[in-house]
Length: 333
Ligand code: KG4
Ligand code: ZN
Image (cartoon, rainbow, N blue to C red; front, top):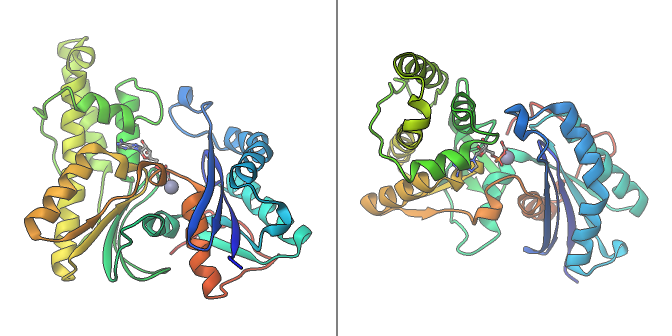
């Protein structure tokens, strides 16, 4: 009999359920929250309320898509952290109640580990060890993956995440949240004619707060000279910012891969949707004759498929939690 796991993801502003049958995803539904667009970022209280509204309809849609009944589910998994406390609480409470009501085991999953484990949904699956650049709205990490669910962080951001750099730049340009996809779109119509200073750091850590200040000062000066500067130059500004962020990410990824002598590289997380990052990863891999892995778009941004697949590997190791589990907003790998 195959093992059927139900997973829920609710760490930020997406409510998502997925069902995995052995290592195969048989359904996944994501309900996104539009309410945050006008605020320029996720409003935690609004996010947890929207999760409560989306919870049951998203669960029902996932069950229907998989064509299974509640009593066929062997285990339930949830995102324990990192994330927003109120948002995590909705998913954690659902999973604990579901486990108790159906007398099945419970698995807690780390959201950032799950972004990496998304590579184990489709073929070709990575072989070990591989180096993964995980870039999302809240995190930027370089991780050596030694085995399923075995991770070693070798670099991370000291301040803002790469996704935050996109989103905060978007806010300065008057774009709606999240601005990453819009900057990517506009950048394709422009050229990277403006240069911004990149951080000089020891080791393989990242920093994006200096870049943010650099962009703010640049825009202030240019808008002083020409009030229409942003409208007239939007595409070139987006292209220049995207170029700088991707260059920071790719140069660190290359240096770490060489230092640790790893020839398999991957990207994960929402920013791995970025077209330039994907293109640059491909050329980097080609130049160095490395194998590279890029997840399907639907498994880059927050989704429960990645929670389900991470839970599948934890299930094989009998890595269960219990009713004392609570959300951990700052959960570490
Ligand atoms: O992984 P994710 O869905 O949520 C977190 O765990 O944070 O990542 C969301 C982030 C946002 O900052 C969003 O702007 C960024 O991913 N993003 C992109 C693109 N698509 C999403 N950034 C750059 N280019 C994109 N195409
Ligand atoms: Zn995420």
